[in-house]
Image 1: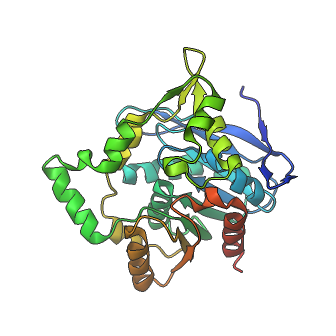
Image 2: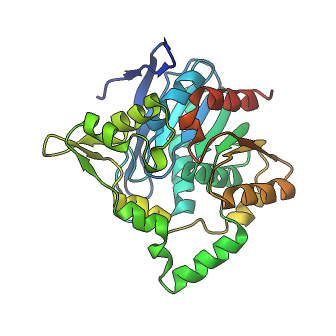
Image 3: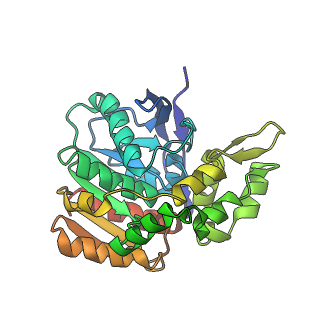
Length: 310
């Protein structure tokens, strides 16, 4: 039986008390096993958290350790990420939302009648939005951290490109396929990734959280990515179906926060959703697409205040 995990996180010069997390697993209806971690139920409100493409729940350890002061946590690693099974072909964004709901429902009884909130980043933010549309009464409030919401025009172009077999060759997918997968040590991985690409601007603690939790030992005594670059590319080569009709159905009070330096389409899609759906609030914050890894304390404050209704 896996042992409970305790992690501590340093922010600035102060250390915060360790947060105990217990592993969970769910043999889902798609034929593979989803896994993750959850806090021992304490009666506090619960955050259901979904990560971005290529990451895992504990990549966000610095922010989550702060949120754990006031919330219990339920972290779900999506198909092929973290400790979840690869599961063969990627089952798609919409099916991923169904499976995340399925896994949550299998464990929701642990938390009795505590309020349940939903939080997700990037790919996980879109999956969370699809979950809100599919189960409108399941979550009391939600925060989407820089979700990669594609505009209707982009969705149309993606669909057309997909038909003619071109979308799988987009730049993000191509870069993911070429991503380095192995390093001789965790220190070498940290040194090689520091300040580069999507990790630019991350705090040291956030990058170490990625190195500690999104990498695993390999057969040569080094470490390798838990999420295969081909899986990351599969996700970048796909898109959610019926996205905007799903977004129209979201009735859960939702905050969509995006970084001032994020992808250009995110603010446009956020504004469109906000204008068409009164349940959705939007806010621009300092930083890029991974702003919560650049300033975990400010991000935890943002999330906590909205979930409390402040």
